[in-house]
Image 1 (tube, helix red, strand yellow):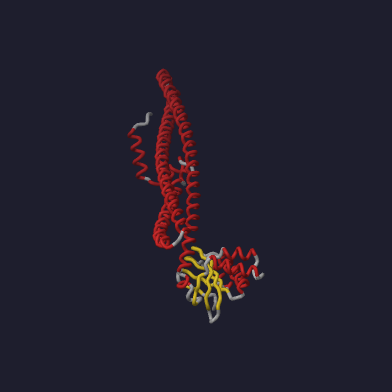
Image 2: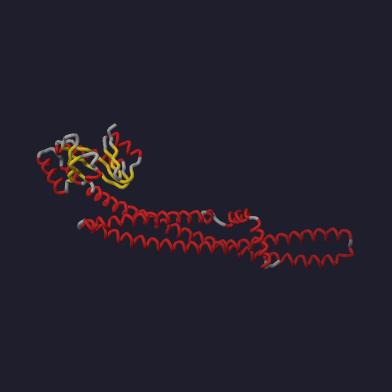
Length: 356
């Protein structure tokens, strides 16, 4: 029995009336990777949305950097150049993301066509099975009539011949259906290969996003160091009075004198030169120093470095030195470690003392 357009519309109406059949049809036709495709696409859209939100925050940060760069020297100009290259890279990433989504849409269209072809093949097989069942029933009735009426042998022979012809046509149609199924399987294999290629491309996008985050973290860290250095008198006023920010030259001179006097090792000198911020001031009527480590997300490593460098600077200057960490975000476990190690915490104007 040929497959007609009306049969297709009947099946569409059945699937619209029974949504649960569509899920079962997808489960039988599609591979597990294809079923997970909407989830993967949703994850990609979510990752893209988060990237856009982070880019919006980056634009706000860049506006602040413009004002800081106006007052800064060659180092901040270099940061502006890196930010321009970063914007170019982000634009390229957005374009690549758009192309990936277009390819995924074309892939979904191809899969839908494969599902429709598979559905038509199954319908034709169902009709073929019904036809064979009818032929079996007709043959059984013919044998019963042959037992009762010998006079109708000639008619039964003719009916048998016709039945055999229909069986031959049914077998030929079955062979054609099997060939079409083989072609469908080959096309499904091609779709799976294309999906693997899409997954590889997505892995590349994730790696580029990670690199972008690393570069943003470095740029933001440099900006925070500059902001805390310029506004040290405001941020660290609850800790010290008469604050004086030590420049690189002043810190080098101070450490060189300690090195010549034997109060400091060469390794400690190199480590102290990497400190983000060194201040000099007074606390409780006593001159002392402060060493601060600055990060956007304050970590336990920042606390440990602040403690080690404060101890080394105390040996070099023979004066009390306060260890401090500063930044935007202070996790609870890091705050607990800072209180345990006697480290002050400064987060955007809020100062947390390690003392009870």
